[in-house]
Length: 92
Image (cartoon, rainbow, N blue to C red; front, side):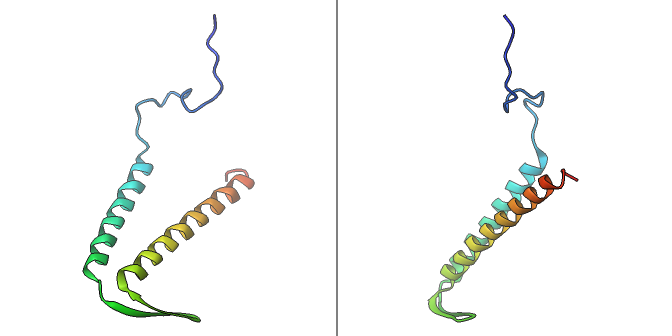
């Protein structure tokens, strides 16, 4: 009886190897999150945030958290668009 493979993620010969770029990204992201949490914990005063037509009075850590989340979402969106663009152009 022959073994059937479907090209899934377990069919490659890279078992047990570590994707160094992925580890580096997770490490940098973890350090950035840790630094952000420490910064937000130390900056708990009430501030007024003005951006374009928005004026909000809130705690500084709330503004930082919103900025961090929006930045992460924007970064992921750009990465997805960049990957799709590269795929459309033939991966060059």
